[in-house]
Length: 336
Image (tube, rainbow, N blue to C red; front, side):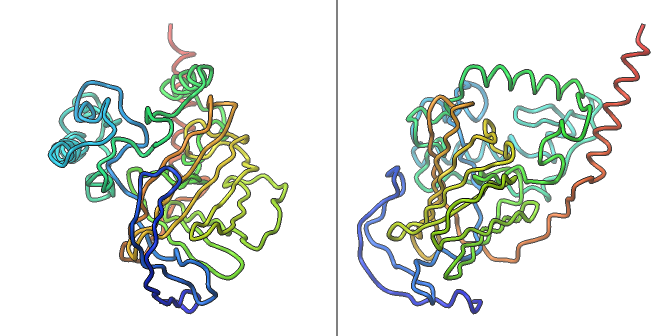
């Protein structure tokens, strides 16, 4: 345990829940830092099979989730087994183009993707067997504006057609500037779903394994700055046992679909027990969402260490994307 996070375990009984009411507690053991704040420090994983949005499709393993708020234990076991099989790239990438697998099979001219060793997806749903991390709205779906959906479809069509006039046309994850799960907000994805939280009397540090993105969040009452940043400008405060982090002044979108420079994000972190911190976030962006929405997921204690994600701006992957796009441009010109 590092010198900044020497903790004292105090036994106490309290009642409470996160704002959404999804994670509730009747008793808890409150950890305090050496300087007296609630202790939310540690190394955590947020990997889970629970999707951000509740599926609406009626095919494949996702059909088990559609139209349900939560699954029974039996339904959850069936879904988890089906989903793990559906996502097994060791078989799927080489043989068939399976639902949810983006890579082409060998028969389709593909070369296969990573094998399963390199993935770190979740293997189970959240403890309460919910069918979405989103708890508000009740539909479990992101309330996208209609015009955003149209823009997103055009963007995806451009990507499939190889559109990349410049490195600025590519996503922040393609450019190795931000991870595809680090956000903010954090959302479980294919790998590097790990985060370390550190506390001092004046700041809280959120260090994501993905692209080693680090947010140093003042909690001393200072106002927001005016400098726009990829991770936004964050300020924190304690509301009882909950750390509330407000972030705005984004430079552009993050890894969260629908986010933009106008996004206003409120995150909440609360220690549920010695192994779990409840993470809740509310997203507001009237340019792309019809109204604010909220998701909740657990950060579960895991053994370290965090590993370096060796991805940097100008990485060879981006060079390959741009070179491929230029080759496609040439082919279009040469076509009769």
